[in-house]
Image (cartoon, rainbow, N blue to C red):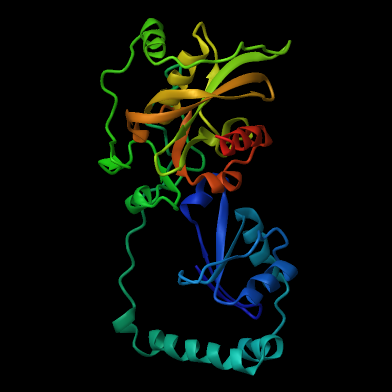
Amino acid sequence: MWLISPVGFFSVVQKASDVAADTLTVRARVRGDLEALREQYLPNLGEVQESKTNDYRFRAVAPRADVAAAMANMVNHLQYSNFKNQVAKVQGAARAHLYHDVWDVLYRLQAEPAKYNAAPKPAKASGPVFHPRVDEHGKRVEIKKPSQPSDLKAWSDPNGTACEVPDGPMPDAINGIAVSSWEQGPASKADWEALAAKDAVPEPEFKVPTGYKKAAGVVVREPDGRIWVVAPSNAFGGYRATFPKGTMDALSTQATALVEAYEESGLHVRLIRHLVDVKRSQSYTRYFLAERVGGNPADMGWESQAVMLVPAEKLPQVLNSPNDLPIIEALKKV
């Protein structure tokens, strides 16, 4: 969405990294426009990032709800009768003349309607969106705010964030490792334990504080350095995105980590080492560092509405719970 205002010119979009975090990326060609927007209407706009290679040189991220509130605030404070005059008053005559050129080009929509007015597309049928897999009680799970998949090109960009939704399209391979459904995966708890024992890694004694449930999770790292995370369905527990993990149900820590990786992300992983033990709200969770050896994120179970591949340096922007910060810090030391 383009927004041309007396404050500045902006391009507001939803990047793949915005999906799980429920944020929007606000881009501009002038740093001062973003700074003015933050000062006057959008105080929660994040740090301005600069790139000399991107179309829009400057950009920052803000919560979607705050962007919407900022736009509403602009409308509520609108009192001028002539837009270009207001631009000249606020940003100077040169900017007003530039916007007039934009107005002049767009006047063609009115002057030549047959050329530019395409026939409206039929409206898509609306209705609830359900996860393709049922929950543990055999019931369908409605996804209140469905995640949006990224372009397939994002999976091959080591600096980009990619996002997959249940049963969505995926490339044939990522980093030279095939992306394919795990057809012959373990079928019982004994099978999972056997798989864990096959490639078991050393781990310290697991001392769980009184009152906390035992849990295990996994941090899966790609050869290009990106990290796999999951978006819990309907932001369960307040998590927009987090690492796969679950309570230990008659399984060892390492078997539990393998199970949770597959059930929540669709990935077949191999553990590399013990990473860190973290006290969460109700559980004490042991995390292992792992690598992907197969599987397909499109096969994610009902507990996840999206699976994402995120550059390690962007994890603090994507993960919203302070419970995940010790994991991010431990990952930096590996």
